[in-house]
Length: 166
Image 1 (cartoon, one colour):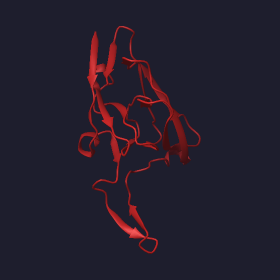
Image 2: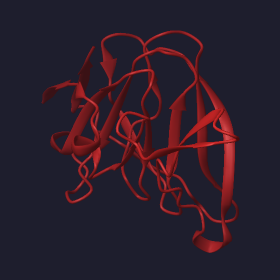
Image 3: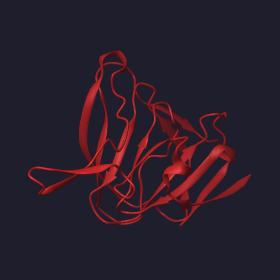
Image 4: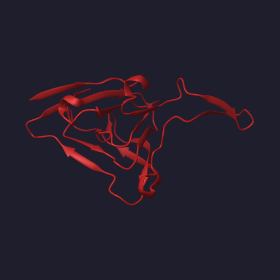
C-alpha cells in the first residue's frame, strides 16, 4: 500500500480537531505598556498539569528530512499539550491523525504552516515529529515536564508506504 499526503493550508478551522493554531491574525489583542506594545492574548491552551506536571520552554532546531518525506511514525503526549512556534519566517509541515479514529495511514492529515503560524497539539493527539523545509529551523516549544511517561510512539508497518508531498 502506498499513500501520498498532500498538505493543505493551515487554518484555525481546519486544525481545530487537533489543537490550536497560534497566530496573531484574527486574535484578540489590546495595547499594554503605555501603548507601546500590542498584546495578542490567549493564543493557545497550554495543558501541562496532569500528574503534577509543569510547563517547559525549549528551543528545538530542526533539519529537513530526505525527500520524498517518508512518514514512518507518529507520536503523542498523553499528559499534556505541545506547542511549536517558529522563530524564523519559514514554512514547515504538520502531519496529524484524526483523534476520533484508530491511528492508520488513512487517518492522517497534512498541513503547510507559514513562518507566522504555530501549532499547539492537544493532549493525546497523534502528530509527526518536527518537519522543517530548511536547515537550522528554530522553534520555541512549550510542553510538559515532570514525572510520568509523556511520550508514546507508533510506527507504521514497512509495507505501509506513506509519503508527504512538498
